[in-house]
Image (cartoon, rainbow, N blue to C red; front, side):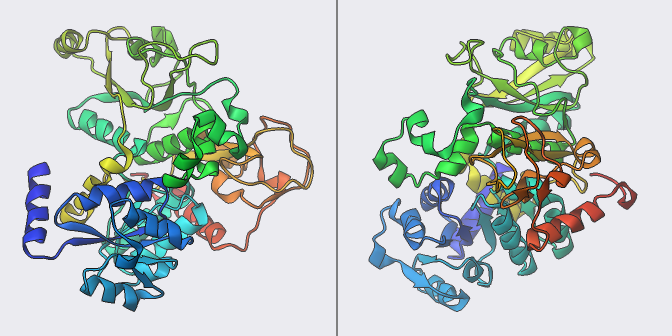
Length: 460
């Protein structure tokens, strides 16, 4: 695959016809992508969009460009004119990116479910491939966005480098070789008090300086979702919906576990492990049992898959090569001790444009849901502020269980008003809130639920 991508990229460079990328959302990921693309030939960031124009400018400034080098566009024709002049372009209007004919692929990196869904739908309607960095949107309406992309003949995909894409690489490799997946997931650093974290404490908890907060365009609410556990739950739900793996319990087990112990811990209870079933998503916590310090030799922010084989010959080989096993000698650990976020994201862009191949896309029918759970005791009338905020966290659950209990998807909870008091730790159901049913996102989710009903056929 890599040789094919390299040849395709070189051909585009030789023809002076680079893959033109449109970026929507110039936060930390967007800036990182801009820097990575700047070092490549045959592909270019043609336009960066952000509601705050200075953030869009920052994406180009990070690679050494001056403000006077950048065109400012108000609509698609002006973006096209800048491309003709080989001039980097910034805009506050995402639709100027989406409607520009010269843009081949759109990277959605806003982190907001409603915005992500709207941008993806519009890009697909304009015949553009969509790289959905916005997993918050994907776990809410990814299945129907994938369906729309299939109908339009374009690629809808999650991104390499981010943990769901990195996990997909392991899962694809293992399944291609005939291994079964017992559990797949990512590492976390989840301290005992992290679940209660708020955006106000992000800078202190991460140790960021004021300069880092500004230079790396840190979104405090997004970073709080990393620390309160919501982001990991969202990402693993995206993995579930791409792979068919499911959470074993609501929120997953997330045990403290060393690398050596992972094949044994992520095994069935009957085999000495913690799982009620195989084929699950999971989280491997690197925080020791004291709830604060880090345990030795843990996964940290890496990704993993516990794979299984029944053949004694293969078991013997893997034991020799890997050194530890579990599940009565059938389970073995694949892992990468890192994920490189925007550094490897261009691989997804190249696969989509040159091979028409996704890094990973949702199945037609979701098997998991991020449900909305009260972060603290909430009073009647409280307005929910979504993932990473002050009021709720997201936890992964099976789609069947969430539907049966009529639980509110995290992506739809923002702005909902509680009609009753809700104790901390309670999963919020639809009869506890007034949801805004007038939004485009709500309508799209309703359409997805109809499309995903069992009567509509296969999940894959």
